[in-house]
Length: 118
Image 1 (tube, rainbow, N blue to C red):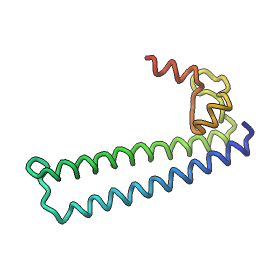
Image 2: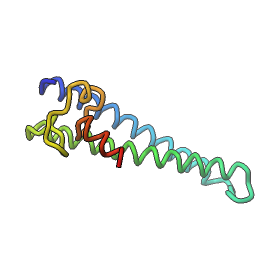
Image 3: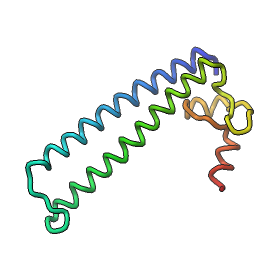
């Protein structure tokens, strides 16, 4: 993958991730605001458990999305310093197909599989 295509893909991924993160933050704030005025007791109110679950699920998704945004930023840094597309584990090139599917990846398919196996 050439550098300009990689940069375009990463910048598009960053914009989409930032937009998704903002949406999640707004949704989480809305859930918190909706439950703030109520007297939900997770233990005794059947709706309380649902609200708590939704809030925790959104918080988890937000955390995952924040990490992904950091990964994309790190990939942009690697692109600028010339190390983008090189596996951080074995030093071999990461295949173009993998970079197209996962533009922020740090490892090649072989190393990713080995990491999952352990």
